[in-house]
Image (tube, helix red, strand yellow):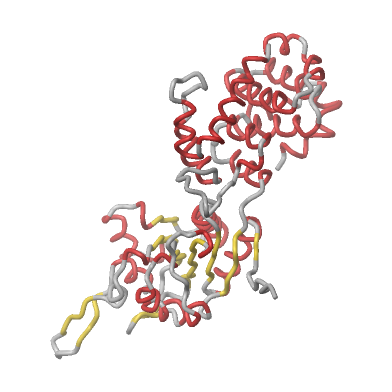
Length: 383
């Protein structure tokens, strides 16, 4: 008989709600998920949103990205800051959390705890401590974290009441060299498994995070290339949302597909097969006479190949990125008026994320937009 999984699977949108619950209830949340799907990024971004909504009178501080002087300032003025800490327990020894013993004047042992933990024990502090890659730490270190996770204290000191605890780790099935979490530690968390994002939700995220439009257009055409991780594969590079957004996005900035190492750079992040497809997709632009299409937008209706349609979107975005005055806004309206709805929506959303001001200032004055397109597509620019 096949065992029934007891895992609670959630989407990235649902994760936001889970983090909100962990913040409001101060119940420790453990998040499991496969590699490269944005667990760490999602937690940090949600921490920023919580600060903006619930603690807007405090300054957001990413503890891991500020200098020593700023950390001292936070400790000295805890009521002025919302602190987000990314703590990797895999870098600790089992005794590190408890601290270093010190004998006081009365010959009583006190424990000098680490700076980050000392900050979190102030009753006026507010924030989230994120134990990322939790299950990469050996069982002895995980065991030392029992008390801080369940009882919200370590030895003689306790966490501030406005500190939430979240942890994350890769699935044990992913062969990520993780340790299985002991059942007593598991029982100190509420648990959820994050699913890989679908291409539509990832695209919405990518549009607000300056991901190259060539990547977005390609993954709309090849959604199965957003995430293609096989634990048994010998390949070191494979497509994941993280690989596209953090690695490929940086590697191709300022480069075109005719760069001599373009394909190899992409392959170094997402694998050879995917890089070949991505480069071939970019080369499709050479088959499109965009100057003629600008003069006669109705020619778009003659394009039948799906890959060419997505490639055209990429061309339109590159063109509009350089030309977005009133006349260009008129022209992009003419172009999308001849596109199938799904391609028109993607084109407008990609353009709007980069040039909201130009489109807001000009679209309302364009008769084609006011009388026709706004009724069908206006809601997508308001999101």
